[in-house]
Image (cartoon, rainbow, N blue to C red; front, top):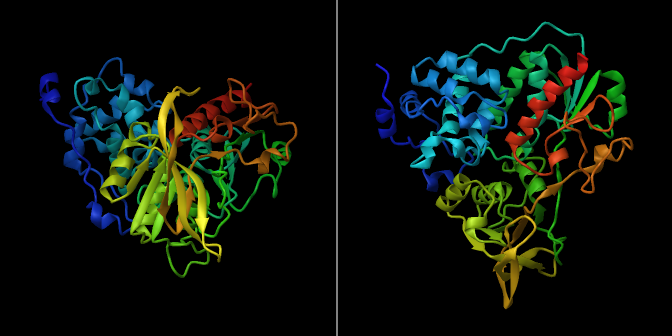
Length: 464
């Protein structure tokens, strides 16, 4: 007999089992262990099945959330998987790294007077069940005879490729690295998003007919003009992978990394292994400058590589940290130290050129800046030093000009991002773009939203 709304409201949110903090701080295994069938069904029962489901509006890829959750509650996991995968090309990814708390879960009516439904955890559960039980792949439309080139195999590119393949088009993805996945494999650590999960998602897209060409650098191996000549349409989704540095004295010392390089070496190149051909310094005292998800990934990676003191240095307070609440919570549990309201002044080094410390200055929050956040202001005479032997700059990224500088007809804004119209088409007819190369550094799910939208727009353009 179905539960009444009152009975559903009485169920408390089910916590996701996780590795013990002290244990996981010493390994790269996934932190969250995921729901069991019993926990997933209990959590699914909490969904009130709203007629006007605001959670769908809060999802950048417009997953029909109540529908797949209802199937979970009824124990029909095959239908739950079919429903979810029809809406989302990478559900095992978004179930792990999407900031649901500020998107779909933020819209959940249960969150008004309590805890929202754990949509992300349920999404992960269904995606993992589908993979482990060889659930059927999506059905593709009849072949259209049209070809599309996708530049970049990150979340935006893979989503567009999957959607276009399902629409019947022949899709080839061009990836600069030797492994597909983009930021999913080089930027997000194994303990948050296991690489075999990404590989399985990619394999599923390949079964839909998506072709992937690795070691193909558009801007070097091929130009955008080459692709536009050989394909009926092009979608550019190369992200924003050029790191920004602190612009302080000493940041050229040995032992200073950008977060991009540090995480790429560890995640994609296996630098955690002492026999790796691409090594990485394993500092005993690590300071990461920044407060976003990338900063949390970097400092938690440093901890797992053996740092006895792993520190976040951020110029605002804890309430202003842009990282996901879950990532901050996990970092605190793992013993990460937070130096808040501090800004770097210079990197200190020894005569041999190795990092010995980071000189900082205390800050206080003043009036709001153009973004609406209170602007950090230096406190005179508050300089101090954090002793360290490794510094990681995680203060943001911008568009890499490798592709754009070889394509003079591609209109860019002042930040070097591709300018697109409401259909995500660039200044070159038939060349579309989305994700961070358009938005600037953003989230995985927003890039996926652009990929899904672009696929619809490209499909319409090809059929014009």
